[in-house]
Length: 230
Image (cartoon, rainbow, N blue to C red; front, side, top):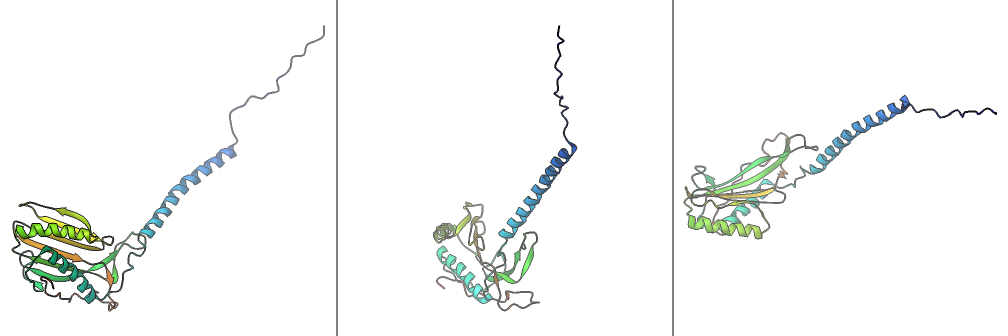
């Protein structure tokens, strides 16, 4: 009988192992990806901060006396809407007790190009006007504040807080506009029948400021008499 030849398998079993160079390449790509993700995030954050703080010290040039006139007009308008008839001379004798009619200024701050540091802006100032009346009864304060609240809304101001405190707590009205750069606040204390108001204008550069000056806004500004229809 002819011999039968048994076929021999030529298939080699797989061992399941891969080339070492292939594994190292994959590992290298993975590490690069892990390093790249935080780096991109940091760059995006820096770019966002720089964009958010762009022009943060790009203030107009306004003489302190002109800014004082502007901020006083804000207070005068509110005073008229409240319906007050008394006149208030410039100055204050006892803060929180007596009448007040004063101007003040403050330095302007910037957080830097990356928003990572707070520092003052050379030559820039922020002008404010504060006023107060004593002996203001509820019959005058309550209706006046409600009227002022509606008037400011109609005039485009954003009311950030308004509270009617009843007979025991203070009544408050806070408004702002121009990205919070211009602000006003009003408070009536029923227990003392004391009313306060204040206005703050946006930051500006003093055209007369020189290097070495400590007070760019010239705090010697004096407001006019505050009164009805001034």
